Amino acid sequence: MTLARRIIPCLDVDAGRVVKGIEFAGLRDMGDPEELAARYNSEGADELILLDITASRDGRATFLDTVRRVAQQLNIPFTAGGGIRRLEDGYAVLRAGADKVAVNTAAVERPDLISELAAQFGSQAVVLSMDVKKKSAGWEVFIRGGAESSGRDAAAWAREGVARGAGEILLTSIDRDGTCSGFDCGLTAAIAAQVSVPVIASGGAKRFEDFLAVFAEGQADAALAASIFHTAEHSIGTLKQFLAGHGVPVRLSR
Amino acid sequence: MKVSIIDYGAGNLPSVERALRSLGAVPECVTAPEQIAAARALILPGVGHFSAFVSGLRQRNLTAALRQALTRGIPVLGICLGLQAMFASSAEAAGESGLDLIHDKVQALPTNVKSPHIGWNQLRRVRKSILLREIPDQAYFYFAHSYAAAAGEPHTAAACDHGFPFAAVVEQNNLMAVQFHPEKSGEAGWRVLRNFLEWAQ
Image (cartoon, rainbow over all chains, first blue to last red; front, top):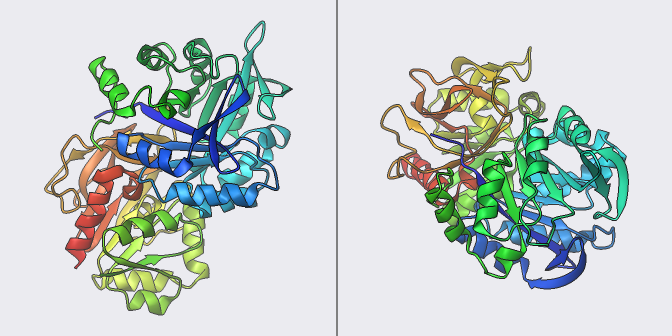
């Protein structure tokens, strides 16, 4: 009996379509969120994350509609985020069918947001999403989709977020995002050692071996990827068979 | 079959409702004591804080009706916090009482394991289970919780280990409950819901 390592496909959405950028820029259309969600659910994904990458006030209704439609396709856990600024925003995505809410920029600007969400919905429903870049020593947190430095140290922010009630950390390496050069295992291991909650590694996944490395060296509890699944380069089922063959505990039965 | 989902104001009801509907049941969300008294089968869903759950029931005057219905033998399925609420009390909310249908206490997960316990885990069967009928032993279920009731007799049908062996599946007379989220646990989870519906019929 072991807690399985999770494989989590991520849908970055803009105006109701799935898009993907490289190092947080240059967006390409990758398909319909409902179709991709249904495919991942049937391929054995352990969870799905949906992020509104523009997170504009105007696009809110469209995003909530996407959350609602994607939720209909799933019988696995579902996290939604992007543009969550207030308790009411969190309530709206949960009511639309998400199980967890991911916070990023607004939490950096007003850390009480994490405490408020955790007090209302429980820590298990609050994911702290952090976009980080390597600095000379350690990593720094960036906000607004990676556009702006926050001046915060990644490890210190992770600790604070957990102390305030975040139940999971979604850790994205901006340096690796969309580069297909593998997860930043040093980053994942460094943050995982600092917190008592699960860490989801993100950014840079390409080969099956990258996943193996992030679970072993990186000490990640879950690994997130987008492009490699969207393009159907790899099916989630095949990836999990590979991991199981290398001794990683994964959920194979659906 | 009509199934009444207790809406105390905090649970994530849409996914439970959708799963039940797909399985051919007719779910209805209930918010009044007389609806509980008339129910044929109940679902006690739950996410959030133990005290929000207890006070949510209290504010809607549902506590007594729920206790009466369950004492009378109405089939119920508690989910996550809904399992914990059947117990006497929880370390999450000192001073608050649960429904106390099972006279044990819910404890915090120990500090030597990751908490919350989030993710897919397997079960260890303690005895023949109604809810796990025709589900393979190696099946995984999705957990998301920071508190748990220690596995024990006579309530626990299957346990899970995270810091200590805890009650993952409770089956005691008309009281059925799972610490995991069956509505979020893929095909195995939906089979648990179907087993409950067939048994409650």
